[in-house]
Image 1 (tube, rainbow, N blue to C red):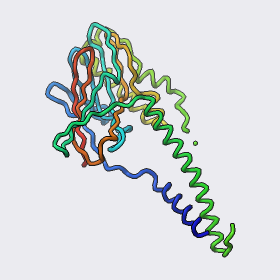
Image 2 (image 1 turned 60 degrees about the horizontal axis):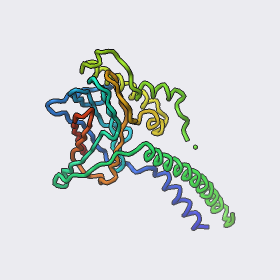
Image 3 (image 1 turned 120 degrees about the horizontal axis):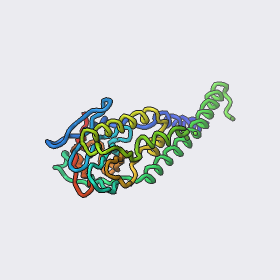
Image 4 (image 1 turned 90 degrees about the vertical axis):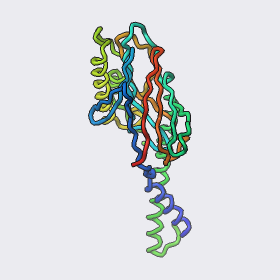
Length: 265
């Protein structure tokens, strides 16, 4: 009886602990001399303008010290030819300041990989809640028996407007010839980030965010833009590593290189 009581108590206490608090991590995009930093609703981003316009910023809703590091990526085609673009156009390396600037290759995750992880966590959480309910019932029963000296004894719904939000966030949008100007490209970028922030605030779960803003591969016609979320797997890193991510984004044959600082305050 006492053994059962202790087992159930341990099971319940482990559930109530929940996820362990991760060490606070600071991710900041660092512009070079040819890049510009701008802020949308308190969130910093860096833009790079060559033939095409590209911007990048860390995305903290999908970010942990030893799990995932995510970014919002936006591309405007300011050239005269269509371009093919998607997560496959992005390469990431990490330069570890805590280990003599050793370089690690960081892999991007696919939609299916992330979705599988989310479904596993949802399943585990549901099972844990079920076992906790059983454990709690047994604990209360055991306490009652002890006093009397008697030794016997759910997945979140999707936002109904998800398809509309998705159209605002990640679908390419045809605009007029003024789209070839960097100024209008940045306005499109800021509008895109505004919609993304709005959706993030309204989303009921990480799955909602993934389903609606994950960047897909797409053809971008001249004057069109494309944006979305890219997610990298940083499980190869420990929670104390500090350094700089170098992100190379290839757009229409040209290279846009971004630096993102990772440190712990």
